[in-house]
Length: 331
Ligand code: SF4
Image (cartoon, rainbow, N blue to C red; front, side, top):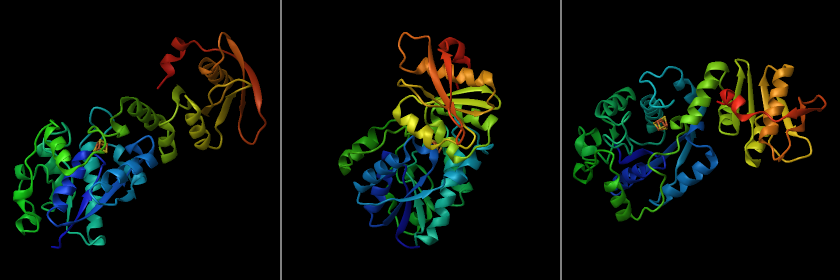
């Protein structure tokens, strides 16, 4: 067994501390972040923040995109979902299986994580930690330095690669021990403990469940869920409307062939997309919703242009939808 470990980084404080504790024992750390589309609304910014966080302990992360494969996890995960659409136990098993595959390629012999016994109700109970270790195929080779003294010794400890005396016995939801360690190590930047995983966000989870129920799911559809207001008209018809300039530009980028586009005609306001069925009732309803969210003060109706590329643009005069009448279509 060599003195090199793969450390899984979420960007949260726990994962940084775990790596720091092991690296201070003279063990080489290869930092990995498994990138998945649900990790953040802005993946590039998320990666930047992770890089900055890890740099504080002298490491550079390797980013490995698992987004496509990850979609399969949402289809009936063995350990079920948390409060939203977060399959936390299956998610951890999946990432650790990926880490196990990486061990020989990076010439490392064990894996470390920042998991803390009892910190999260679903995935950090003792039985969940055991299941994660066993099902990932890393039995004996998964070290959780922050809670290690409360857990069975791992093989790197038994073999004297890691000194168990230098490991910790943190348990539970209090963040005090981690915050004082951060101060001791001079770690100032880290993500909030709850993280930014969109699968734990109730609004995003609702939109994702709707997508899974009515549409086929691909990565661009997932990306679209991060932007705009979403309305479900029918099983086969959905309307998406930008909330600001940034949403509008994402919606334009993520548009698909066959989407019917909507925009205000001659006044500021959002871009919209009608996806699926496009009968005249739905075209009118889409235009009315757009007018109700546009900056058209004191006017009950306004011109809306709509088009499917490469056909020519058409226009219609639409009334402003009453918010309470469209509320039940909002996802
Ligand atoms: S919060 Fe998200 S990233 Fe973290 S374990 Fe759960 S599903 Fe996975």
